[in-house]
Each structure stands twice: as structure tokens, then as C-alpha cells.
Figure (cartoon, one colour):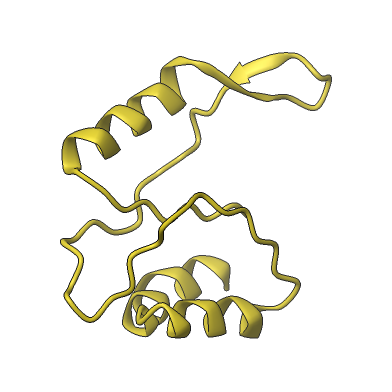
Length: 90
């Protein structure tokens, strides 16, 4: 499973999501370029003041659910994790 946490102007995020579904951004199992049509939005909200803003693009891999949960907690997003992310992973 791939989780993408986006922060920014709502218009820019909508444009990103549209490009994911209309541009060839992935490869299928045979190596052919394809569009990412299975992406879905789990949750959308305004960033609360206490939540950390991410300064740069990062790719991180987690081997356990606990590691992923710790990352969300460190970013001040424990509630987001418990209400939306953990349910998708079970």
C-alpha cells in the first residue's frame, strides 16, 4: 500500500490528483507506462496550527504498522492515523 500525505493550497492538490489520474505516472506488471487510476482520497481537512508542516518531498518505507503510526504521531497526526489510516491497513 502506498500512502501519500499532501499539504498545500487546495487548488494545487486538486491539480496533482488530476495529473495522477490523467498522466502516465506508473508502470504496470509488464513494465508498460500507465496512469494511476486507483488512487483515492482518504481524508481532506485544513491543517491545524499544531500540525507540523513538511518542508520537502520525502519517500519513506515502513516495515511495520507501529513504525508508520510513530511517524504520524511525530507529525502531530495521531488522530488522522487512528481514524483513517489504520482502518485501511487492517
